[in-house]
Image (cartoon, rainbow, N blue to C red):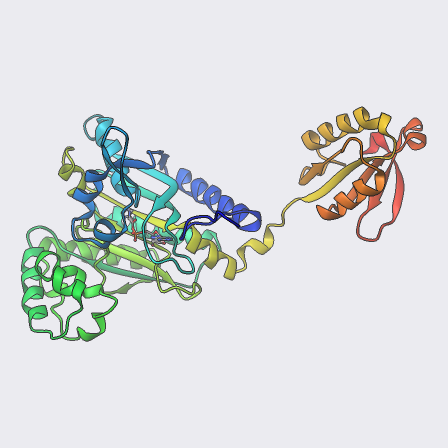
Length: 414
Ligand code: HAM
């Protein structure tokens, strides 16, 4: 084969395609029930939009963005995530002024140049939801509970919700300083950590290489200001009241710089990779930073491919069988038009009231034997044969393709 799909991408068909559609459909139903409105943004944006908001020193911006120039030399990037695009759209359509409070959801392809592995791709789908202009900790709790509910609706109940609060512009600089002091005394930091120490010391906490070396690191809980402390206490209280189990993880810092206060990740034992199924948090400064009015916001996104794997291992798709295939065949070529009209009607109305079927055929100019071979290939449950003698009596032959038995049935009864 000369051409293959690019590394980290894949062609999706069969059960996986059906499963992913089902996940998306179910998530949409839940979002709509919770009052979220769908937004679709372009797959590419001005590259600077992401660089500015996700952060110059994040993995996404430094290593993972697909950046290209168009024919007029504009620097564009395939979106690595959905939150920033939504914020750009929110401002562009003046919603920060006209109707700032809003709940939005999106689903679509995202692109990151990452090392591919199970559940990690360079083109993947996210399904996300964001609440705008709501600074109440109740909105943080609502988003975390929503993420849990969406996963639970896919049969994924064995999850661990990790939460943390990264503080605000008042208290985070103090924490940052303490981290720089601490990390400066740690020996043998990896190259990434050395580079980030000055510009983004929080990111060292979840470094895959060095993180286990950091034992007595400064804890954000000792640096939060009283507002941030109260806020985080309320988020936890509300989660507890709603029976939502979580773990406070003071190493959780997330890979995007726009977060303020609450951040969270939903992890599962069911997926082979250690990566999260869903993640999110509060980002009160993002809209303002990219040119809008001051609009606090909070949201999350799940990775559809990872959630698909977790739902599959939870047995979720076993209840959803694909429709049975029916094949319409002709024993006599002159019945092609009749058989065709029957296939059209059966596709529209179902057979015997059963609409959960897929109808194939008829095929013109092939012997009945070849048509039946085709019916076997598509694993048809039944083949309906239009044959001259039976048809003249208002009947067709219905062949059970498993046991090869055949009965005559009144055409009107189908
Ligand atoms: P994120 O943690 O970068 O957050 O991604 C969210 C989810 O997308 C991850 O938990 C994971 O399930 C999925 N994901 C990320 N990268 C890949 C990949 N390479 N292959 C497959 N799945 C992947 C965000 O993107 C934020 N925008 C979430 C958010 C929304 N925060 C606030 N609102």
